[in-house]
Image: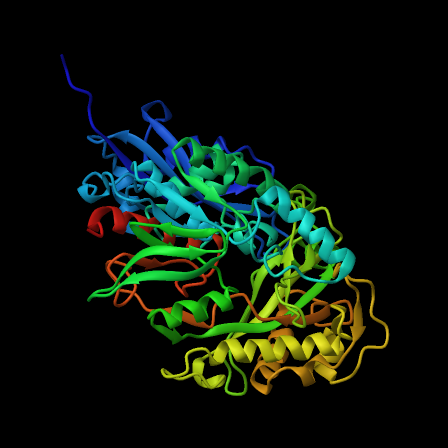
Amino acid sequence: MTSRIPSRTWRALQLPLGVGEPEERLRERAARHLGFDPGELRGFRIARKSLDARRRGGEPLRFVCNVDLIVDANLRPAALKRALRAGRALEPPAAGSLEVPNRHPGFEGAEAVCVVGAGPAGLFAAHVLACNGVRVHVIERGPAVEERGKALSRFHRTRTPDPEANLLFGEGGAGTYSDGKIYTRVDDPLEVPLLEELVRCGAPANIVYDSLAHIGTDRLHKILPALRAGLIERGVRFSFDTRMESLVVAEGTPARVRALVTSRGELPCSALMLAVGHSARDTWSVLSEHGLCFEPRPFQLGLRIEHPQELIDAGRYGRRAEAELLGAAAYNLVSRRHVDAAAAHSFCMCPGGSMVASINEAGLLCTNGMSNSRHSSRWASAALVTTLAPEHFGATASDPFAGVRFQRELEARFFEAGGGDYTAPAQTAADFLAGAESRDLRPSTWTFGTRPARLERLLPERVRESLARALLSFERAIPGFAGPEGQMIGVESRSSSPVRMLRDGETRRAAGFCNLYPIGEGAGWAGGIMSAGLDGANAAQSLLALGTF
């Protein structure tokens, strides 16, 4: 019996696809590009698809795509060789596997691995562990996603935040109410398997290759219960509304966590994965008391800006006919460092979305943005942020939590500037640049309303100068961006963590511990939904390979 010829995958780069053209056209186009007959293809997949919306003299809008072709390994047509030499094709890295073939034997009969936090880092860490037959117990201080909406409604009705059930804490983490954007700039072999798991749970198939992959808050509320159900089928136990209050640590070098003390009692564990999120400030204090080492890290700070969506559409698409096929336009803008101002960029851009309050403590104000899968709002918003280094907010090795105090002080300042009831201080972009109070603020998607304020006076000088230069730069990219139709509110202070838990670069274990793994945004090792999920998945694989026994 003749054995099957092994296959090989080649990636064709930068192939055009017109707006409105079916994606299947890429199959034949990629085959011709690399010199294969379409009948020779064993497989085909889009690896990446991004919109090229540059203005090119009225030319039609188009997508630019990278396409993978699977063929017999012995096929090497001349066109493929030429494309490889010219950099128009490459052999892509193999997709990773969630399974660890040589799992450490010490997990047999051991206590469950405890995962603290049911955000993306914690959920995907639990997923990898469960896929490899390890018992897992997920602890989450907030509620399951079905109950989070009720807490949010109470907050909007009473203006009294619940410290445990809010837009930051609960199943899915802060990302559940922050648009569901899952694109990332990291290149990790586990990215495709994790995205495929989300697709199995109901996410649209194009998230695997879309350069601006977006699920939408409405879809996330259906995907998360499906993901949870799959984990439960694999034996994962969930405890919602359960806060970690302390650790039981066995003395020794390195230290070992024996159990968690929670609001519902003590839980023994064989290992602990900490995925506490970027706003678990109280938990950071507890962990520091138990010997976890923290260091200050740079974080991003700025304001949120909201525009009519039609202004953004016109700036990105122009008047071209294809624009109506594309839906609400997004943007990703960067203002480079200048002698007079630090670099700045847009972040968490929500086309057809709304602004929300990322609040878990009374007396503080912090903005964020979200949108549903249909981008049905008339408004577009994004954070405009610059990066502050530890020296800019007084942090030192001996005082790593100075950034937390700095964030609190700013959030309290903006809370008071809005009137002390979650009304947000606001100013038009034009008045921000002119240093003037805005007389006529239009209605905003901010639930609690806005009031005029001199935002440029509320910000640190470094941030003010950086955002002012960014507005002028972004005006050149999107006409009207820095005009009176752009409305700014603030403060946007929690797009990243101001601290990092020290861990080994190879094993991902916390410094000084043999079975504790800090992961995700709250640990300072990620900056978004997908990067947090990947960090959790990779740390879980490290735990599986190394064991703790």
